View: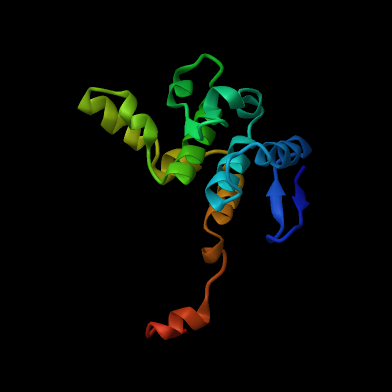
Amino acid sequence: MSSTALGAEKAIIFISDAHEKFYYEKLKEVRYQDVYHKALVYCLGISDDTRRNIYCIYDFKTGCVKTECLHEGWQTSGSVKVVRMAYNLYCNGMPSVLDYDDAEEQVDECRRYTVEELFCCAYAPYFWQAIQIRYPEYRAYNHKLYAMFGGRD
């Protein structure tokens, strides 16, 4: 079941009612109401596991991600994808790479952030929604802007 919410933003698609409730509740707890935090909270609300373990994933007081959560026993193959996608949208990078000293392990962790690695799962439509929350200016193709830079349709 998908539900949608309307507000100042375009309709947001949620995976469940629990996801929608989580989004609006946790959005009140983050430090800023910007696109970084909105995408983070939206993304971390996708999975039951990440909703249940939110305080192991993100420190609401400091605004810091807790990359060590990726190694905890509650993680599933899906929940680690959710966490990595959320971190990537929030930090514009791969913060968990720094958890490794060995260069080979760092490269392996980088590979876990690729589009193929993250998107090849049932959560892909919701990851796309998180990207649109993070980058609202790119939600739709802007013909006028493209034309200003010499593009032709």
